[in-house]
Length: 359
Image (tube, rainbow, N blue to C red; front, side, top):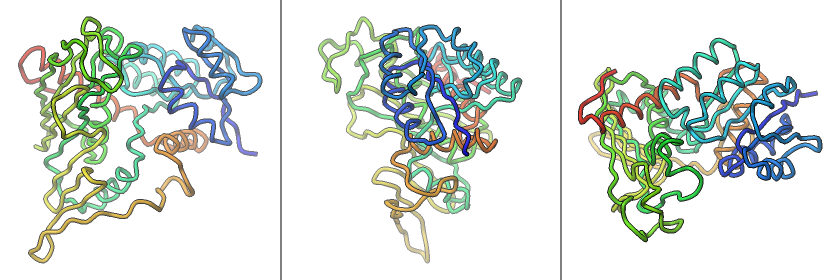
């Protein structure tokens, strides 16, 4: 019989309900046996909706640490608790998937990497956009060298007016930032992964509090309260890598722009380029003629999974659980997620100081 991993969910809010628990529920080799949330009713509802008949409910994750039967923990709490919670569960002998971003600060993220190495337990971060069909195909294109040397990239996470007004999204203390650390983190992770380049040289960044000051602003989820909007409404970074490559990172929840898109990137290499503006497009030159091609991505699989996966979140969950059962590396490695956090922090630091931040 296939081993069934016992999974605990810590933080039973929006991302747990929207991504983690539905995807885990579809897996035959997983059973969710514990649910923890500071609001007990949320944990109770999650246990009813996704748990086993004997699933336990907790309001303090410290109590859950003592349960030796748990194999895996998914941490879906606010950013400022990611590191403390993740380190505690790793040290209690459990594998951990932590929702993005890795941590509120780079120092906290480094503690997570150190804990994973120290305990020998697996750690991954929830960057599910790596599992988009466009991302998976473009990764193969890059690995094959079809783009040549990628020396310019643009990481895009632009919303015109879509400020999340619920939970702690607008709380600087709990989140560590706004759109840059929330959705910019996805775009940057995807771009670094596709380039396979994790060696920055220096960063210049700017973060803005412009539209956040508006009263009764147009917004996808209703007007925000300017008094509670303590994070940036947009932020931008200019990243120069050790090999000379340049990455421009764009992020916003509110920006007067019609050029919008999340978790997208543009790659420009010596042999060809690629973008995700209209599906995946590859552009280049052949026989002294320019070309644009669009791969058909409505069918086909990926290397680590044969069969049908309904969504990138489902594929992320499946490969993560298989990595534990088969003792292989997860797709998103801790040191990769750490570099994303270090670059994001450098952008914020550069914005505050008005100076470049060198690595």
